[in-house]
Length: 265
Image 1: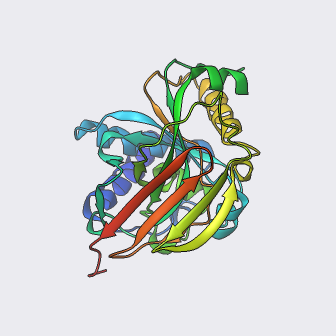
Image 2: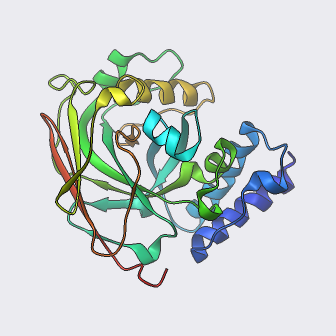
Image 3: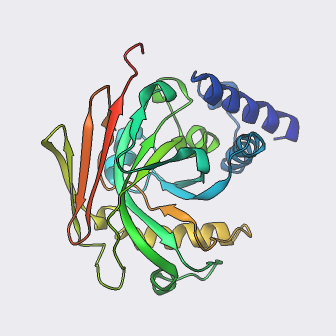
């Protein structure tokens, strides 16, 4: 696809994000869109957000568990960029008026203390380079109408990233086996789902390895201080005004998030 069309779709997604509106699936108007084209559109979309004042602060891995793959009808992982405008700390209330069609997912966040440059990264490299892990929520959001997405659409739309919430509990990967650590997700005081880290490509560490090597093959490193969201361990959870979610990871701790607004949608 030529650069003019890449810029056209990048701008369309940027404007949809700005105005909290949606677009028809990109593949409806461009059936020949390739995965490479989609990542180029994502790059253009994020470039526009950075030009508007945001900073890249990390990466996200998406569509890593069978539960999420089945719900979205997308059957391979993808990645997107995290920016400074997406970050919420535990205790902050997320205003749903700032989102379009949000869904929550619970996962582990990795905070790096060293750079990682693939390819050739191993799980041991990720353990050594990780400062700590945190329970977190990613609130995914789609600029594609009614979540009618293919892998092409979600990649172009920055892996359907909305915002994310980092918990306060910190754990060391040397002390915590994240593949077998259980996760309980509660919605409004009731258990919504249970899972373990192995739901994410056998281990959240494996997901981070995959992304480090995938980006490394493109000449893109992980940088010290970046946050890496490793992919959902839970089914997607629709959220509305007044909802409260809590995810608890065995041996690590909890992350809690509340939502308000969105009643006019």
